[in-house]
Length: 168
Image (cartoon, rainbow, N blue to C red; front, side):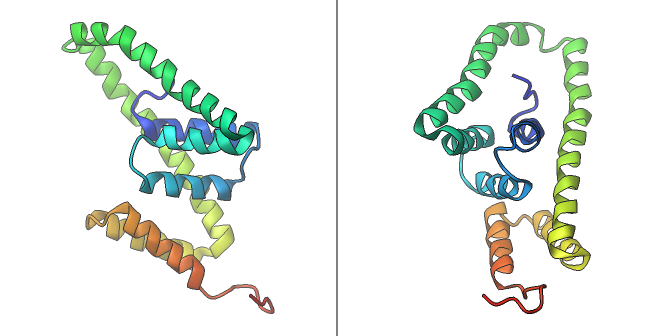
């Protein structure tokens, strides 16, 4: 219900509850879930809710999470669609929409920064900055996110191990 602005605006809210509040997942597990969810077709919140629900409560947990993530939005949209259509040209409604965009941007930026800090800790600044720059360039060039994620997975598999003395 608080996901005004689409699926991406709900990611920081889900992250806060799943990682910080209930500790159902670690930062790394949530990052992996987010990456995989972005490569699959369909709404991101639904995919994430289904997986998290299954992980926490099995099939019943998955069904519960899917219903609770979809049903409120459907009911609110049914209730509000008439109102939104009636007042869509209103300067107040347009102002509200314009004001929400920066808030969603800040929420996503905050989540991104937490992932950058985690990457720095796990990979070191050199690899983290290199991956951010290469990923940004490929995104600007229009490379599909699934290809970018596959490349990053290959990088993670084949990158040299930073800890000396470890054997695979």
